[in-house]
Length: 152
Image (cartoon, rainbow, N blue to C red; front, side, top):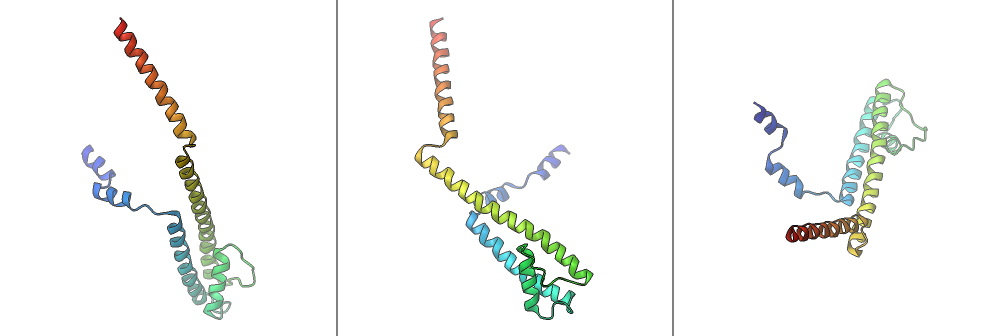
């Protein structure tokens, strides 16, 4: 029984290999996120038009509202008046905050990764330098131990 639990907890190797190769670059992640949210603005704009037609007299007004809501600008020129529209707005506001967080993290990650790559290429990566020092020290200790064993 424990083998089955352990086996079920780990994905099959072919899944691990498949996703290990599919590394998403920060730029592609940003494009994907922007595309998803552009589609989201359209969908939320249409749904808001359907949910609150008295306030959102055209679908274009719904798009405008969804765009300013997802980007957390929120001019306040158009706001939902129906409860269903307010619920939808709440979901979109929370999602908008998440959207901005992910975009910011993606861009920051790209800058950090580029800087790390530049440092490694220049040979100035402090982690690699420290590992080299530790490796050299271990080599010296190993030689000393071997010399002691030979002399005794």
